[in-house]
Image (cartoon, rainbow, N blue to C red; front, side):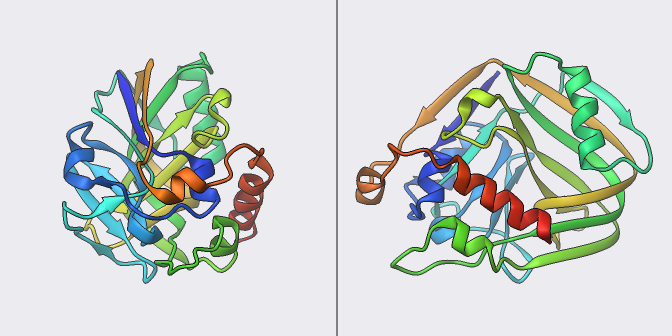
Length: 237
């Protein structure tokens, strides 16, 4: 019942993109999760113990387990609640559904949905070079992918409000198509049919990077406005 996380969302927002934890070591902490890769090179999906890397071209790659991540959250997924998702359900309706199933807003939830989607909109981010720009600038020109009539798996977390600065409060979800060819960070969807599983998690373990960039990052200021700007860029697309 533990969420294991490396680094913080505010560090990522400020441009700390150098990997610090090998994927092989991250996988020892869980078989399910999301994050990104060294130098912000695409979106991470960890599903059934396998890593998938959705790069800025929208395609899915198999990363080297010796490669590293600058930010990720994982768990050993064990679904405790299962429910059918009605056709036509969008992201907001699904979030409301999970909130009713797990009304305690102060625990973490891992969410896995197997579904058929009429529409699925995702994005990814391109690898960055030094000097690293803040995440707000990267997502302003992020590649966006529109998929139609696609089956696949939603992977992600609902985090409590009090993790602001450490993780993303609320829902953070990634997608991987059934044929393992497409995916990314989810912006919107319309579901045809699906089944959701929720794992309620009451423990949180944070490991901080041992890097110069992290040590020198300005993490004392409130970056919630930066995070909201990133979210607004997503909504515009």
